[in-house]
Image (cartoon, rainbow, N blue to C red):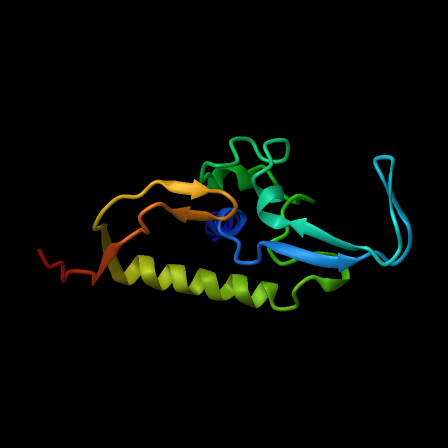
Length: 141
């Protein structure tokens, strides 16, 4: 189950459906010598953070094994963070794990045509990623 969570983490890192978070500063903030005045809307671009090479080695490559060494990362926020962290994050992770288990144990799949992943600003496939899914033991030509 641990590796399944690593696959889920990596999938959320590359394919997060929330591209940005909007927040308003509650007081003046000094960030690297710049003053961000109270009341300013600050936008965190999640996809840019998840694809930052200073945070993730080879950020454009799907590598679930990276999560075997990472236990916590401040640069990974698929469910937001702090007081506004999504309260449904754990149930979402469980649902994804149950879905993957069911899919892997009960279905075979094959690529109809290949596509290259494009990671700017969100990961997608250049031609989509058409696949055929068949119940195990019932492959059609």
